[in-house]
Image (cartoon, rainbow, N blue to C red; front, side, top):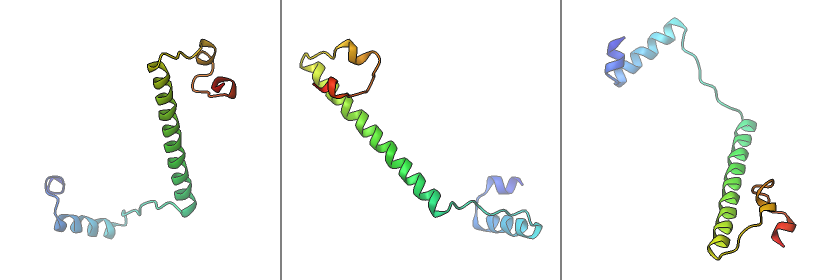
Length: 89
């Protein structure tokens, strides 16, 4: 109804909820269980760690370039972002 779209008030909302409940078309929302919530939290944490690691690697690379130390091509062509023991030496 246009009244519901134009005005958002408690009385309009309660009327709409009552009408949907009477007609049986009111559906519940999905509430994830604890396992799903823990998995989402773990994925968020992993993404944060990956971003932080990338940020630190970029800072080191920038600092090396600032001081005139170039990274050899053998380490930048095929292993972008890879920090092997050979690279660190």
